[in-house]
Image 1 (cartoon, rainbow, N blue to C red):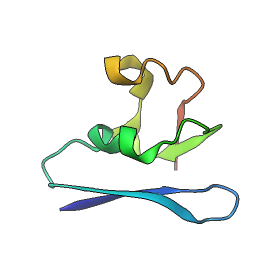
Image 2 (image 1 turned 90 degrees about the vertical axis):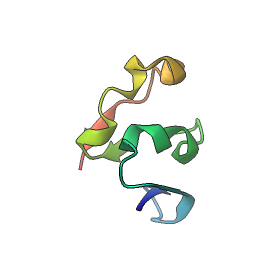
Image 3 (image 1 turned 45 degrees about the vertical axis):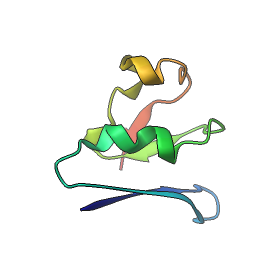
Image 4 (image 1 turned 30 degrees about the vertical axis):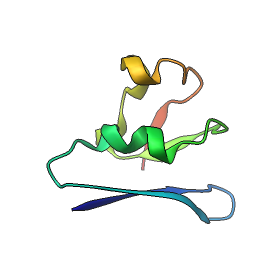
Length: 67
């Protein structure tokens, strides 16, 4: 199992949690973690290039910064 957590950058408060099986790619949970008001997104390499996937093309302003 994996837990994916969306956290506010300013206050460190958790705003979303998604769990998946360990064999599910990290980017699959992205839609449940983002709330469409993001200005920055930090993640590991599993979240790179989300805007290239069809289901995330509307997220033009979101680019993942490696943490």
